[in-house]
Image (cartoon, rainbow, N blue to C red; front, top):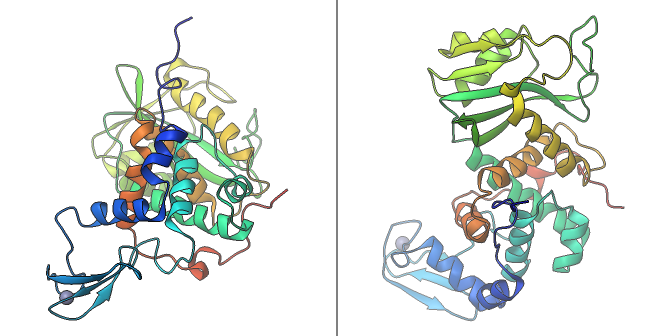
Length: 317
Ligand SMILES: [Zn+2]
C-alpha cells in the first residue's frame, strides 16, 4: 500500500532541532532575526541606531533611549521561562499528530505543570488569532458539531441540541474533491441568525456552502453565499459530499478528547484553533515551528489573568 505522503513526511528531527535551537543564544539569535529581518528597529520611534547589552539581551535606541528586548511586546513578554523551553514547546505543539497535553509538555521541557499549561495556552492563542484572519472560499462543506460529545444519531424533538455542549461549525474548503483548508468556529447555536453571522465572518462572499438539510444552514444565504443543501435524513450524513467534514470530525475527536479531561467555554476556541492550525499546515511539518515563532512575535502579550479567567481546561492525571 502506498504510504500517505502527508503522514510520512520528514518533520524537524530532534538532532536538527538541537542544532538550531539547542542553546539560549541560538534561540535568541533566531528570534532577533525573525523580529527584525532588516536589522533592529526601535518599537517606539523607528530608529535603527542602537547599543546592545549582550549580558541582559537589551537593546537601547540611540535616538529616544527606549530600552527593549526581542521578547518585549510579544507573546514571550515577561516570561521567565528560557527561550530554549519555549522553542521546545513550540516544536511539540506544532509537530504532534494529535494534541499534546500540558502534562506531556511539562515533562518534556522540564517546567511545572501550570507553567506548561500557560505556555501552551499562549501558543494556542497565537494560533487562534492567526487563524481568524483567514476566510474559506469556493466550495465549502459545512456541518454542525459539538465539543464535548457527538450529536444524537436521531434528532430528537428539540433538534440536535445537546445540553452543556459547545456548538461549532466544521467547514472544509475543497478543490477537485480534495480538502484544502479547514475551519473550526464556535457559533452561538444552530439558528438561521447564527449561521448568517458565522458565514459573514468566516467565508468569502459568493462561496458555495454545501450542508445537510438542517434548517439553520440556509442562513448563510443572507451573508451572500450560495447554498446547496443535501437532504440525508437523520444522523451524520454519509453522502460523499460530507467526506472531509466527517474525517475531520473523527480526527478532531481523537486529537482533543484524548488529552483534555474537560473543555470549558473559555478555552475551547484555542483547542479548536490548534487543531485547525496543524491541519492547514500539514504539508510542511519542518517549517511549522519557525512559522509559529514568527507569528508569536507579532502577537501582543497575553498575561496570565487574561488567559486563566476560569479554571484550566486540562486537569493533569
Ligand atoms: Zn527609539
